[in-house]
Length: 53
Image (cartoon, one colour):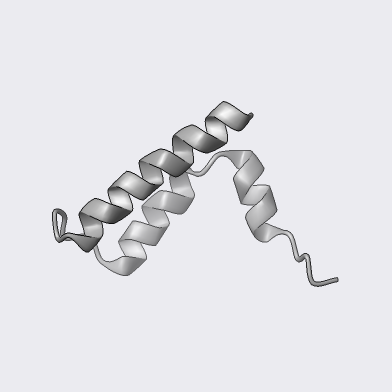
């Protein structure tokens, strides 16, 4: 699980840096869509958890 999270996170960071540098022309919405779509299920569950309760 830790490897999967790190692999996704490092890849996501690399893609985000390229996006900020203008190396791709994805809209912010598309960038977010693709990053969420590729997110491991464990992170999707954490993302959707309301920790404020």
